[in-house]
Image (cartoon, rainbow, N blue to C red; front, side, top):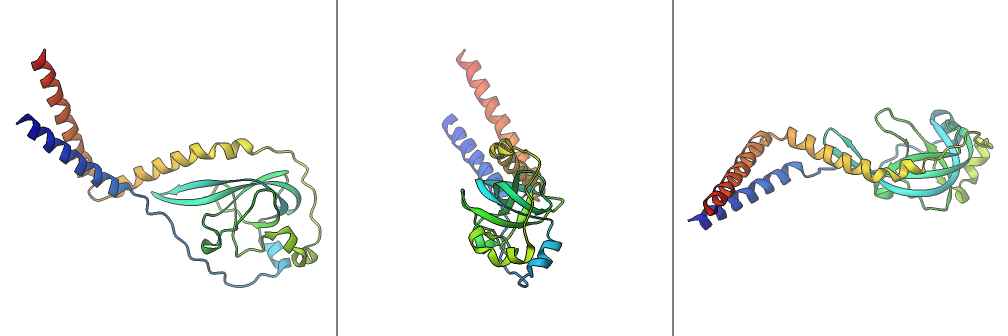
Length: 215
């Protein structure tokens, strides 16, 4: 009889676990890439928040959470050697969509130099770049450089290596926060949590009673 009860509890707990797991599964953001038009370099320089050139020091995955939706991006640390606008420090971190050109994300390689056109958005922590901008590897940017002229060397020393190192912790926090938000939004979240709590409490009570009988 006890074995049968135990099996029932295990089955019910497993069902609740599967139910909750389905509620908190990450839907994730997906993008298709479509750029409206080809930009003129001089106009792009005016309209873009930041334009600079520099070598990539590090590329790391970054998870951004918004209302239970997780968005995967690449965080890219640059060593800046020249700036046209929006940059005063010798290092900067930019974001681009994870997944490459299919999601409008630039593909950066460590050690390579790029000319970068980036924009700021209030809801995001770093500058953002995309394949719809004039961002390009330095070796292929000569036509753009002819129209925008020379940049200036940044005067402020900065070190954002620690910010890159902290990404693994902030990514974990974003994933947990996203799961929590999705759980709260689910129409049957309350019922699932209640049933799970009752089953756990009942199992704990059963274990305590068995220990008392043995003693």
